[in-house]
Image (cartoon, rainbow, N blue to C red; front, side, top):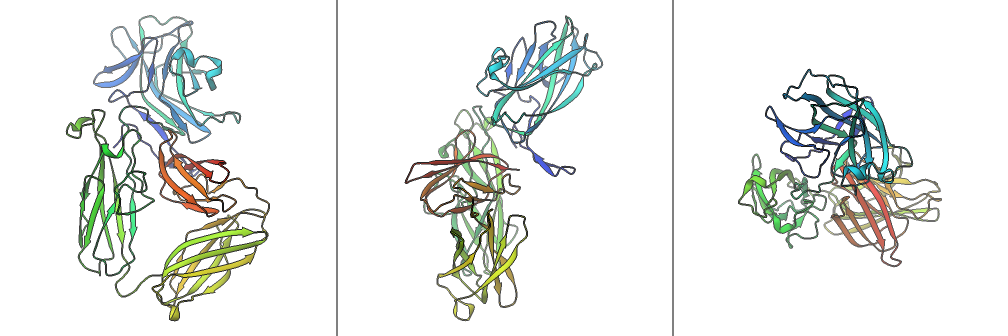
Length: 492
């Protein structure tokens, strides 16, 4: 789907996820630094990097594009073989013992000479002995605690004992785990995220929405899912197009327009869910959708849910928590209630275990209402660490629905911004700001592109949802003092 793929895999022993940079040089990529005679080549129909053999003080260097560090431990793997003057590879051994130095350098480095300058090097591992007969070689490196840089380049510097005349190196299949690529080329792939539209009206048969999510530029007047944010690192909205890939399996139809809007129709109110997929395409470096060879695409799924006919759900909005001294106050609002008995108040100290600490009965007559109703719950909470609350709404038939989690600061916590969990496994996070100051909030990728934005946000906590695997920056600017709070967000 993309030339550089971001993989997430799980290692049972550690239950940890790692992002990877994978490169097989087909087609030849941009952003790599090749020096000392190194260049792209094709050997037996396979695209590779070829570089002259080395010896003495004549190292060959190969550098990656800029990558983001998603783990403090990085694993580097690549295939390397020796090739003689007649083009023979495979079982040919290196003429002398051959080494690789692995250098983690500043992202501003653009030449192999600068990669060897001490002030440009964050960390390095020297004299890694390559297999005598070539093949796949891997090593694992953990950054020292003093290295706080989040992005860098990886340079592989080769040297040997003695001269290696009439020898070349063939390199292929670079895999670096614990990093993600920062797209710096002229054609970064677009990213489309899954959308979920939860509708309120049981009688609604059709509606129109926008797939472009909460980006800054998208068609106005359409329903959006703020957690589904389609974006592209190097293309504006005008250089993107959308189209439907698969219609709902049964019971409805959808029309996806090229501008990222859609219209969906369900066949009857008894159909409570429709799902379809769509494709997002950019117009490539030539800015022309007609020439499709250089266009790049991504696809996503849209799910639309309607309430069951004859039964309106309890619709919960604006659930918030705040602290005033030793008193914690929870507030929430319902827009619609049907057969509601009330809400269990549940609390956790962050260990994932919730206990019920109170109950608030419904204010709706008979448990039914079509008007907004405001609720409040207060309790004494002297915990020094952060506390997390949720509501469990209880129907008359005993059905329970659990709300999203809201965090509240501890008694002794300062005014710094706190994110929990971070790293997150699902892309859903709680942010605690420490006050109700009015803030402008943005989430960007590491290139600075704004992915999500909230203006004049005044609650002391918020929930972030829908982030894909990767590393992001959250910036909250206090409108009264202009103070900026910044936090790196990691989604595994």
